[in-house]
Image 1 (tube, one colour):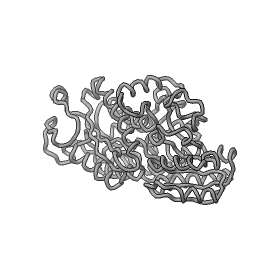
Image 2: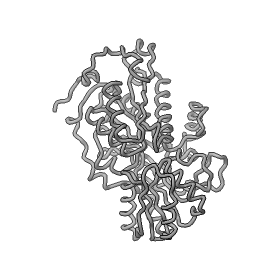
Image 3: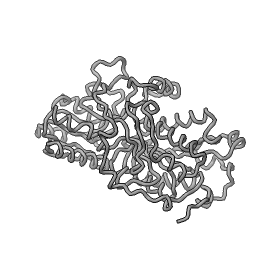
Length: 429
């Protein structure tokens, strides 16, 4: 179909004049001095959890987004326009995520959406975003399907996924710990897809799955599962358990003295899930995309900016979730600036195939946004508990760093079918 030149207001059928929105429409920041001095603000909806299993990660994700927005505004905004944000709780629930996305687009007039931890919530948000053509930055959900069968033209996936992390860990762990594995899996989309990736790699490298134990989201008592693990006596437990569930699991494994035998491979370790726990809770090997003590250009300055921006936050250093929220928002705003317009199709084209240097990303290897799947191909780190921390925050020891090509999820290329530009509604935000 022909590309529309309608504005956001025209697309949504609203009648409010530009710059004339009232603050009673929602809890978003609105500075009348900016509104009078420039064109209407660029409005971003922050779609992160404030309750549910991923509330802690949602708060960290949100802080990263807001710091990137505040830094852009301190430089004079984007295209001379202030960037405003509104946040609504997605509650770690797909149905709520869908309602939040619909409201942010149709009532709050957000031209862009940023944020997610739960992959089910991210998928729900992205379906609404694609319907309206609104660019959606999925910051922190890790199901392979997010850049595979559930990909969309408007969605960009910023975290490593379950396959990326499994590729970094599985072969080395078979060689080091043994072939007999047990899977411990959160019973929802991310857990299932991560376990499936692990199974495929075990089959490829000669490992075996003795059993798989499914644990519902919201599990706090893992005693039955841990008893089953003791009875099975596997060489390795591959855990795809996240959020508050993982915190409870780690505490109970440590209490039972099971942290060293069997070996534990946690597909991905989000910083908010373990920050402040005793080091004996941080057993096993796990994946991450970033650590605040990487000896790389820009890392120390980034940590200082975080601490200046959030002096009262109990989490005194940024982690991978904050990092992903910050990077996704920063690159979105930079793409708008490069495009010279808020037209969604123009901004999408600026993001597709974007090359990002290792230095700009504060990672070991260069990164890029895959134009086929819209996933960021990036460095994947494996870590374990730091036995010689320099301070109370220094919890990780980085063991390996895998370049993007070594951990690429090739199955996503065939599974992802992006909508055409012509079938994606076009508008100026």
